[in-house]
Amino acid sequence: MKILKVYRVFFSPSDTTKAVVNGIAKSFADYPSEEIDLTKFDVRQKSYEFKDSDLVIIGAPAYAGRIPAPVVDALSRFHGINTPVVLIATYGNKALDDTLMELYKNVIDKGFIPVAAGVFSCQHTFLSELALGRPDEEDQKVIRTFGDELRERLRTAVSYDFKPLEIPGSYPYVKPPMGIFPFQVETNEYCIYCMLCADVCPMQVISHDNPFNIDHTACIRCGSCLRICPARAKFFTEEPFKKLQGVLRGFTDKRQEPWYTIG
Image (cartoon, rainbow, N blue to C red; front, side, top):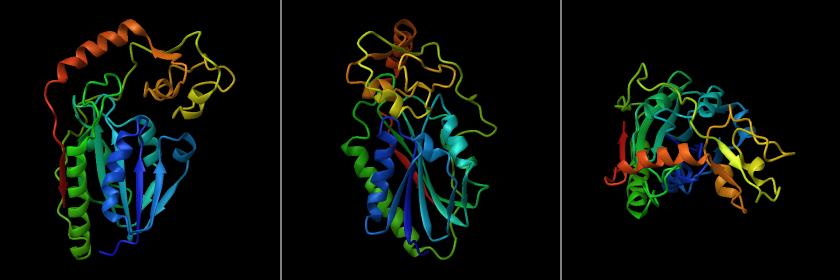
């Protein structure tokens, strides 16, 4: 199989899914490459057409065991022509559930051929000590091995002789789509009106005129605004957020190891 270009596609408000996708792409560093950052609102509104000579690596995080709704919407405008695709799901060391299966189901009927898939634990958005620092050095070794094995498999592939991938998860999905959170993004008096939060918001739900004005019904609690705020003026509603963190601490003891498969 002759690959002429690699596309790095990801939704990654905390840059961890991006790190995994880019790590795999390093094995193809001598190929022309293009980034499609689905975290950006404008990027998600575009349509994309891919050829059979393209390799598309798509990464998405688990949001309550499913891929985020904006990723589903963006992938509805992706179309391939016998295009090999690599599917990557990341999660905060708690539960993957149906995330990878949903990612698979959202590309399988759009002209893509899934040639490989992987699952990687990344630092949790709501509790930093859960998978702290991941993907770490050990993860990066696995990611690089995955990329190198994938490159060799594509080099030796005859036409499209890939075995069907065994994708973890259930279909119909066991997990419902992410529901309403018991907490929301708040803003305190330390806000300096720099508007960085509005600029980075993947959903564009923070007003560019007033950073206190947030559409909480469309907010996905990704934490982008909290991470970028130089004044630490953004925070999640304290009591329900602390309660969730208490539940998540029960998953900090066991390290979930990476997993991948190549067809």
